[in-house]
Image: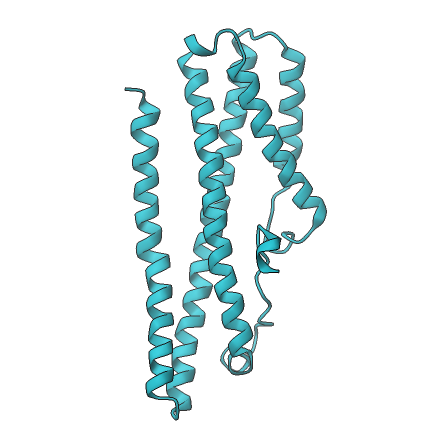
Length: 214
C-alpha cells in the first residue's frame, strides 16, 4: 500500500479529533451554557456578563487557533507545490520552460499571504485565486507527463497537493462557520461586550467566502 494512503488519512483524523476536542466542543458548550444562564438567571446582570465574557474569550481563542491551523496548512501546501515542481524539473520532463514559469509564479505568490487584515483586499483575493489555479496547473502538468505512472515520487507529491488543497478548503470553511457565529454573537451582545473588552473595537471577522456573510 502506498504510504500516502496510510499516513495522510491518519494524520487528518488525528488533527480533526484535536480540533473537535479543543475548539468546537468548548465553543458550543459555552454557548449552550450562556443560553441556559440567560434563561434561568435573566435578572442577574453579573451572571449574564460573566457568561458572555467566558463565551467571548472562548470565541477569541478558538478563532486564533483555527486561523493558525489554516496558515500552517497553507504553508505546507506551498512547500509541497515547490517540491513537486523541483522534482519535475530534475526528472527531465519535457516543457522545462513551462515548469520554470510555474515556479516563478509560485515564488511571487509565496510573498503574498492572506491575513485577517488583508482578507477583504481584492488584490489579495485575486492572488489567492491565482494560487488555486496554480494547483490545478501543477497537478495537470505532472499527471499528463509520460513518466507519471512509473514515477512513485511524482504521484505521491501530486496526491499530497490534492489532499492539502482539499483539507485547506475544509479548514477555511470551518473557520468561516465559526467566524459567522462570532459575528452574530458580537452583533447581538455588542452593548454588553463594550464593557467586557474596552480595548476591542468588536469588529466582525472577515470570511474567506465573503458571500457567506451576505
